Image (cartoon, rainbow, N blue to C red; front, side, top):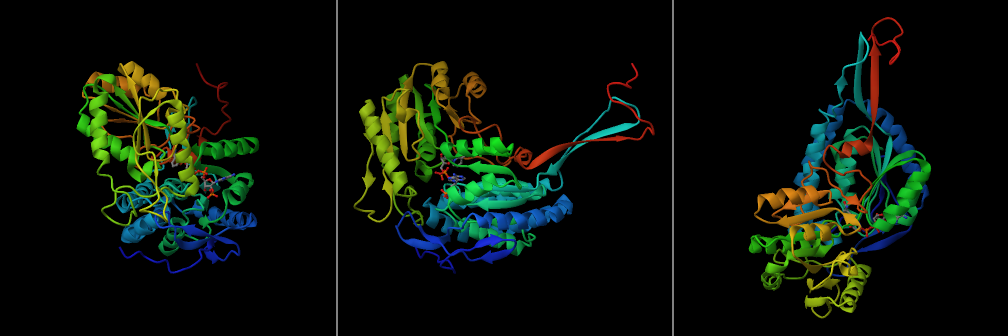
Length: 498
Ligand code: NAP
């Protein structure tokens, strides 16, 4: 397990095609080992001004380049990402902790997004439509908004950035990207790839630094016309309110409290696999992670037995080791939050079936927590309502599909849900009634495909979607164009002959 080493000891901002040194910095820690990997710059707010100035200038020219030519650069980015997939995956595991198999999957998502959005360069469809008047033509087209700001979290440091930046770029915008301070290496690597792929200077700018400084400066910069944010609910709400005051477009993807429903006719072995993968993959630190299992009372015990047996095989450790299934928690404060919820669950009267403790002896320097199962949880307990963001699952027993749907929908979030059943009627009722942006049937709650819209209802978002063609709506304005070739002034609604 010889870990790769970065060729630099300190990262630099990438602004207007130049690598700029920043005086202040802080260590990026590998959560599996507690060792420093690199220093990340802590830029001052002025760096945002510099980046926006460059982006504004570059965007004007970029928007005039035909979209299929803009897309050529994305194809090149995709090929370079593909060539470097293993390098990217290894650094991703080192900075984020997720196991190497999942890191490869995340990088693949970014590659897929590059090719998918490059294809959009030949579509970016608008509509033509009949008009009310003779000798008149009407159509719609997408226009870029200008300079866009993207703010991304540490748990998917490359995939989420590609969901946002690639549609923005192909649509003719320039991007200012503030990556999470915990996971800056993916941003550094992607900026290098964009540079090598020939993306013009100023179209992708990476500004490293604290959210409260750089993120805040982006949110308040009048020349950044869109903020696309993924992260926690609290930060998202503050950003939304600041953007609201400025009438700035804002797209938010936030937390989840996702559930797997297991009905009494389900294939319990398949359900067990789905739950284990979506609850404990990435140590439960996915926005789509399963943190509730809503099970029909008739199969509760049988499911619990299977889950406990499967949990015995979950090896915990450094994700660079191919045999490891569960990596570390991102940092000490993530670990503290999980520990706090274990105590809350016990105090609320939930029954701790497995796990519930930090691993301190075998894994002294990293941040590790055991996969944890609570049962006899009631739907209103805090552990069944609040996002824990760790490998902790609450089992809630129900008597019917209707009750299962009610429990699923009875949280403030609405990202992903899943149902295991072999009854086609239940499948269709569930997909109709589950109040989440993503619904899975006979699979866990995780694993989005990039050509479908990604996002959630209620407290998870504000109605926008990442990825899919729907992402283009965030980064474009619809323009309605009327061409009157009648040679006279025709007044809509007035000069219509009836
Ligand atoms: P976070 O603390 O909200 O941070 C997310 C990003 O926002 C980071 O880059 C952070 O910068 C920045 N930020 C912090 N304060 C800011 C401010 N005042 N103004 C502007 N930006 C600011 O969230 P997190 O803990 O990293 O991420 C975990 C959360 O993300 C979970 O709730 C998870 O469910 C959610 N998530 C949602 C989705 C989805 O698509 N729905 C996907 C993945 C994750 P720093 O680097 O300085 O912290």
